[in-house]
Image (cartoon, rainbow, N blue to C red):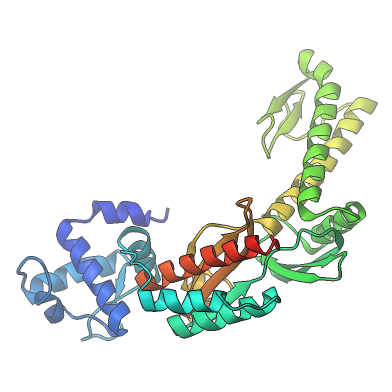
Length: 357
């Protein structure tokens, strides 16, 4: 079992935690390995270089530090950076200079929202010296067509064509067990329902269908359960099963009863709709402020980059887009996080005021 980084941090001694923190901060500031002799001059307690080296070796054994060369100092591993960001990062405030640059960008009196968002992206790149991403507000227009395109086993591109002619591409990780054929089936099912409906409408419709199917199964199975021929396992949960005659396989030992055949068909239909509901949730979902380090981010893992991203919301507190910065893993997270967060809040406010949310 993989150790919990936060638990590891709380289990550290005060000395180990300080050595770890100073190595990471030194690396983020300079990009160079941090040696024991350097730390002897900055530790809060007076320690010998040999003592500090011993602590570094322990942290290296835990997978938090690495030594790029035999005689060099240490740098944090990806796991070490994640633990630092989650447990030790001190987030600063946006400087007056950075705040002024962002405010000026959003003060541009341009009726075209796409042009304003382009200015935001340029400003973020200039301020942070990284690549910026600005995702435009999500469409809530009725959908004309949906298509899922498999990019890899854990990445799917969804293409949304809206009734007003707009097209959006989004990438998500599909639920476990999905295949190209099941994704095609999901797209066909959704396209049959899509006319005149938004993504939110589709999710509500499928949720209602799931509830109806579950009630139908309940009614049909009630007599079997009451007579002791069948019982529910994990009732109401995603992995629920109806076990007949005590066997562990769903309806495998069932009689030729028409009711049992119908229950089997309803279960198949229920499972398909639950899979489709999962896909829609992932298509629509948006997280709070997130930091993806290295391989945690499937899109940028090959370049050893980090992504700091924050969603922005409309007046109804609904996530409609996102703002982010991509840079090397040794980003100045304490400075970048508040800049991205501040920009996302301003963009959300601007979009709400313009009535585009």
